[in-house]
Amino acid sequence: MSSHRFCKGRNPSGPARSSHNELAGLAVKAAGGRVLAGIGNRVVAHEAGIAERVVLIEFDSFEQAVAAYESAAYQKALAELPDGFERDFRIIEGLD
Image 1 (cartoon, rainbow, N blue to C red):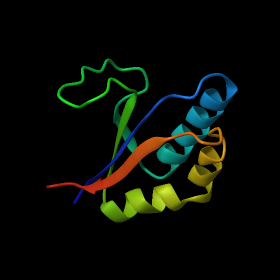
Image 2 (cartoon, rainbow, N blue to C red):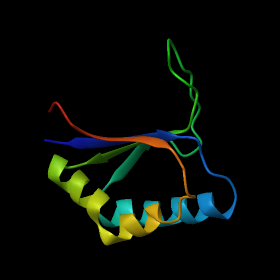
Image 3 (cartoon, rainbow, N blue to C red):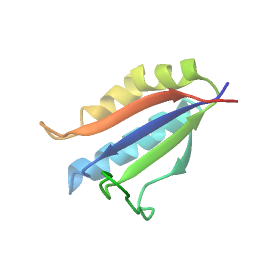
């Protein structure tokens, strides 16, 4: 059963963003993740939604998605985010 990682947040600017995005992308790819949406795509928000950057990543299983988040490579990417950076991050099991 596939699994998805959903992350939204105000994008940090400057070197922190560049470093985090590069390291996170490498970590996700190494863990078998596939980016389905995000990284500059257009957003239209409805109801209480906020038009913020959103990233949607697919993995082959829920366990693979959790392991990718907990990996040393992804934790290194998280360490690049500035102090106080706020984001909404979820790992969701797929329906298939």
